[in-house]
Amino acid sequence: MKFGVKKDKINVNAEQFMRAAGYKYITDHRSGKESFVRQPGRNRYPRFHIYLDHQPEVVFFDLHLDQKEASYPGAHAHNAEYDGNVVEGEIGRLKNLILQNARRSDSDIQESKEEVKEKKGFFGKLFGR
Image (cartoon, rainbow, N blue to C red; front, side, top):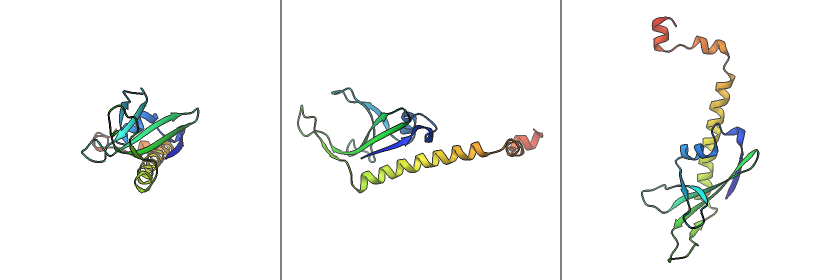
């Protein structure tokens, strides 16, 4: 399942965002394609598998759920789900992380200089800085 996000909505580059979302970077040893995976359990499979497609202003995320490894040696095909509740749930989780990230940055930008000066930490209050 694919979805796209404008690059200005993600505070960091897409690869850093994927790591923060719990994914790890992999390179397919057969095709050389770069992607990210996240294993919800302790086993290698099932795992969420995502490819990034960078366009000038948008990053497209192409997500599927690998259920198991290829069944026989030399095979490239594997059992994967490209839609359904589990995949939609993971996309929802990623979108929420993007929204939380965007809200955090928006609120930081909206703070005025006066508000920042008034907010003092423990040592600032103690030493009057």
